[in-house]
Length: 199
Image: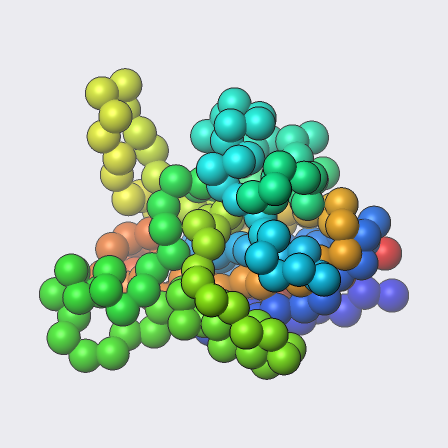
C-alpha cells in the first residue's frame, strides 16, 4: 500500500523507484511548481533530458501517453495520467543562486539547484551539475513571436500527475522556492507538495 511522502515547501526530496512502478505527484495546494528530475539508478550520467524529449516527441509539453527520454535517448518515464489541465514546462532551467542575483536578491535564496543536490545527497548520491528539469505544473505561455511569460499554475488543489518508470531510477523533486515572480501563484508563497510510489 502506498503512502504519501511530503516535499517540504522550498525544499527537495529524492526517492529510488523500480522499473514498472509509478510516481503520483500531487499538487497539494494547487499552486506549486515542482521541478522534477530522473536519473538512471546505476549511472547518474544518464538522466531525463528535456532537449532529447522535445526532439523525440516533437512537443513543448508532454501529454498523457507521451514518454520522456534520457540524454542517451532511452525512455525513462511515461506520463500515464494527469488530472491537471496539462500545463507543464520543459523550457526553463532550474532556479539557482545566480538566477536570484539577476532578480536583485543580494542574500542567499533557497533554490531548486541546491535542493536537487541536497535531496540526492540525502540518498548517498553526488551529482556534478543540474540538468534542465521537467517543471511540473509550471505555466510558461509563449507567443507566436517567441516571447515567454511567467504565469500562475493552472492546477487545482489535490490534482496530480502520474509518471511510470521505464527503468530503475532515482526520482528527485524540488518545490520551487521562487517568490519573486508569480510562478507559484499570485500570492508568490511557495508551499509543500506530496508524492506516492505506486506498485
